[in-house]
Structures are given as C-alpha cells and as structure tokens.
Image (cartoon, rainbow, N blue to C red; front, side, top):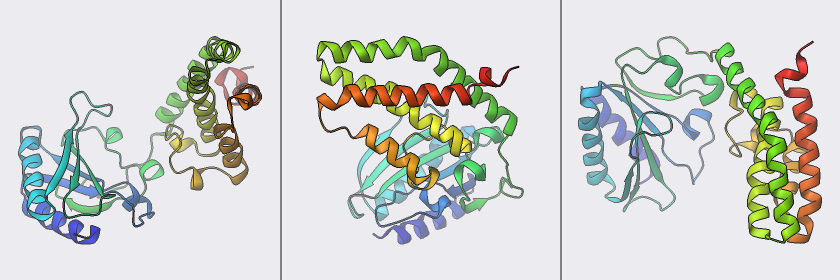
Length: 258
C-alpha cells in the first residue's frame, strides 16, 4: 500500500470515528519535506476515557489495510507525556513506519506540538475541537527560559566533563573516549550552533541540519564528528572544546549580565 493511499484510509477512519476530536499529520508532512523514505506521523486527540478505544480502532484499520508486521507501544511515562506507538506493515515499503501519538483532549496548548515555528504546518485531518481555528504561536518567554537553563547547565557541567574525555584518550580507551567525545563535545556543539542559528528548535539535535544550519557550520560539525582514526581524536577534541567554550562565552546568559 502506498503512503498516499494509507493517508486517505486513515483520514476516512478518523473522520468516521466520533471519539476522535482532532487529528493531523506532523513530521515531514508538516514541514513539506516528504520523500520516498518518509515516515507517517499521525497525531490524534481524544478524551482521556476514549484513548484506548481510539488506539484499538486505528490498529484495526492498520491490520485490515497494511497488516501490522511489528508494533511497539511505549510504556508510560513517555518523554513527552502522550501515548505513543510505532507500527510497520506487511504491505507497505519496509522504510515506512507509522509513528502514532494519541493525546488527551485536555492537553495544554504548549504541549500539543503545533507551534509552527517548531513543528511546521500540520496537515489537519479532523478538528472537531477547534485546535486549529487560530494559530498557536511559540511562547517566546517560556522557550527562552528553556534555552537559558540549558546554557547554564552546560556551562556548569562542561569543566567537569572535559577531563573524562581527556583521561579516556590518555588511557587509550578509544571506544570510551569516542563515546564521551560524541556525547559531550559534538552534541553540545550542535546544540550551541542551533541556539545561535535556529533557536526555535535548539533541542532538535542532529535532525534537519541541512536546512537549520549554515553550510559552514554544518561542515564544521561533520568534520569534527567523522574523525578518521583514534589518532585524530585528540586534535578533534581540542578543536571541539575550543568551539564550545567560545560559543558559551557569547551565548551563556551570564555573559550578558553587566
């Protein structure tokens, strides 16, 4: 079954299910970046008492249309607080995963994943509750608070974490050193680049960097991430450390206090 046909079947099912209050497609559909390998990211909203019934209805639909080959239901609590499950079909391309989220109708607006600055413009399938009658803009003050807290924590932890990378390098524990380097140097550097160039999605990690970072920044990050051999790690670590510390000095809230 092709992706577009599955979307049509899903829309028909959700429209007919009176327990569904709101539904939309997020992910690549919301950002206009679908291709032949894109997943399907439906988000469905129901009253708390109806969530399990909505799940069962969607699973019945998937069984009839694509034949569920694998499923994984995330146990509570999920990181975002919403019910979530993953599905692969027998009659869909192997690359096509369905990442289903079902939200409580009482979810606060800031927890709905519908701010266009962060999540694009969803493809609305059902909106009985009027969630999309008006745009839901990003709460700038709250978001800046998250960025400031992240920067403060990184600035405080950074001096404690760098010796862990150094010791692993000196000991020749290359797998340990490389893991520490990727997690405590490359990833934070990516976050700092995002805060500088794309603060609305500072916490998106390595996703969508082809559109969210300038070419020079992305090329620097790739060069530091894809080192050739263990012998190259000390120099890469030193450069990544300098980049982190230089950017922290500019971006950290403490640096702007007079």
